[in-house]
Length: 474
Image (cartoon, rainbow, N blue to C red; front, side, top):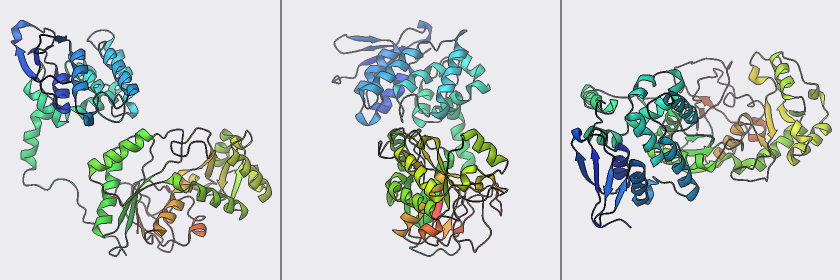
């Protein structure tokens, strides 16, 4: 229970407990600050309650503030396991002191943060605050942070230095000998420079052939990590066109790889989309269509457009590079259907196989040399569990599910891949994709125009055919 009167936080002005002050503000926990004069030395921060009880030390006080914070802040995590993981990082942050081991520890932290935005879970916790305060107060970190081994830790550090909640606290209590957040001093100057000027890009783009009420866009992130700036660009562009033409926006999770995907990433992506201001008309999952996709695979085998290959992966890769057809390419339909059943069952024989589209092994584009359409994976899926043992690749699932979803909404006429490979032939009846010549037969002809998403790397061919996040479906 929170005390009726705010406890008193006393600390030296030479070393203010920045992490505690930030946690207090984020969590809505009132503290009465009593900074000691600098000449009294860097005495340990102390939190004194009305009855004389004292908590001594930044980490102890930080734990108390996190426990008293609002539930929505989640500074101590949302469950017991997360809280324990946070405690581990708090204990380890004690070792982050200037000296011989500092560089080694920072390099380990940087490696850990390579694919993360926060130390624990999908949001800010006191684990981040504890580590960040150590770095912020360290002259040694200033000296080494620009070196390549610390790239990811520096990126994480600078992310917080630009958070207004951090900037406000740090500018109020500056650590002796250190400047405030690098962003703080330049913020006002930057705003002055931008005053009266147009900032950012323009959405002054037209979609050829688009008509009011007939545009359907989809943003398809894979729930195997957190969103980055490229995702934000694609998401906002898709929302713009959906709203501009009074159409619909679909957020679809491309969850076809259970080895990498987690509910944690789904929740975080949805939260980030909300922060970006996205208002989807529906949220769907590729896994919703697994049954139809497997049925499509069976039909393609029966029609001779897909075969099952048990070639070892290294040899398969070598054959594709050298344009050599696999011996399995001549399998009979009966043999392929039998191996397909083994893949669906996920048995020992099926695990050695991959389903491949029968395309063109002599094509100059390596992606079109009989690409893999399905592969086995026995790891439980985050939504379907162990129901399925074989999963489609993105190249296989994406255009098929596009067709299924758009049939419920409208007719496809435009596509905007976020990596720019633009097909110039207007007679092609689907967006350029390694499997596009196969899938229209299964989905119905889809007349599609491809819209240039950016001028970077713009091409009038599909020598590098890909279809990535952010496709406009009209």
